[in-house]
Image (cartoon, rainbow, N blue to C red; front, top):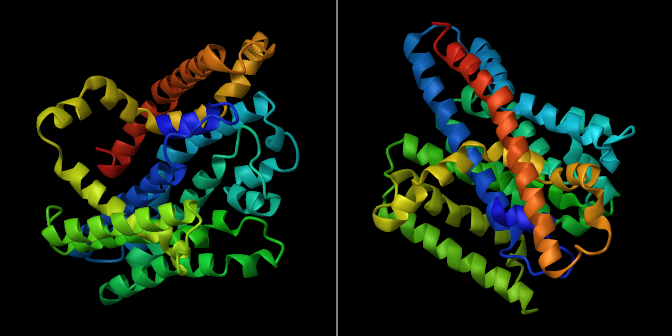
Length: 344
């Protein structure tokens, strides 16, 4: 989150910490892993009870996801409208309201100020709607093949990036089909774990390590202008596989000093409100501009002044994320818990 916020907040010409894709795609792969695992466990429980269950489970699933994801999302969208984010003050707001902003931006071909991060949120919501149909409605023997095919769509569409642009789509890479390998590879990890693979499997460590080296080679080679032999379209696929190793390591847990740092209450608190941080961090400059307009008098564009202004962005983001957690997310968590327990 810190790296993504830095990427959005720092002045033009300042160096980025890491390629933004590492952190954004980590979240997408993690989403595929967690959602797939949750759906598989629900399928096991429901089939063990017997009787029709899919339609009722689908309704409950969408309600629970809506309570967790949609209420804070619409709060952020309302704030974007209040502070007059440029892309939500006119007819374009419909793209955001119906979780189609990634399609909207694919045709725009530029990042709308203050709301450009909504494209990934739209893509995730599309995934949430479609994925139960794959995991719950297909026969079990078809699941692995289906998820592999699903994952393959991502690099295939990236291979045909230039051809798709001829259809009038400026940025095909932000369409959901170009990102299906992130979700799908996370889903494959969940399927493997569900079928008995240990997260400490040596094979998983080897595959993840090789994939990381492949990603670094392709990314570095491309940055240096070297020949990548057509592997550029698979760069994110390699990264997604490598991130599975990181997810496995994080799930198992870290010992020693690293474990103590990660378990520190400050980091735990940041993790707890991380969704709110992502929702509001890009709106923070707009909110700050309404409250502290003098920060744009020319004295805060570089050096210490720019760092001070970024510190204000961080404080505003933190305040909005905490407010979202306290008055929106936490109360709805209790509702979700009642739904999960059948109202008991």
